[in-house]
Image (tube, rainbow, N blue to C red):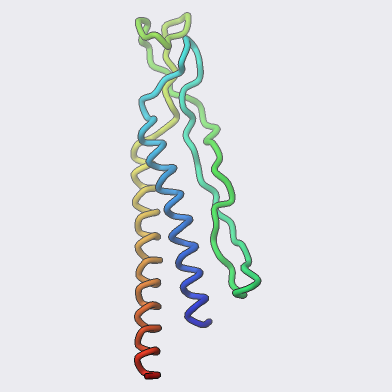
Length: 135
């Protein structure tokens, strides 16, 4: 593998993890949202699915975000009869977001991003040293 391919692979990994971090941030920000009307569904947790993509010009497989989907798990229901979003029985639907899961996803994305950044920096250093040696 040449250094250009390593740069492309690392950049693709950083781009995919950046989107993943954005989705995690959106999930955390909407953790306490409710539906707009009584009995309406609240925000549904989003998930990121990755896939390999072949870059034929470079001859490498790159990671990419295949799709941003939604988590089909059920909503949490809290008994709050005075809440504006409460249904006829007094229950309010809450998003299907678990803060612990989101923090774990965030840490995993951050570590993967950092690893790709390290590869990018190392590759850049190797290219710089190669150019200096050729002078």
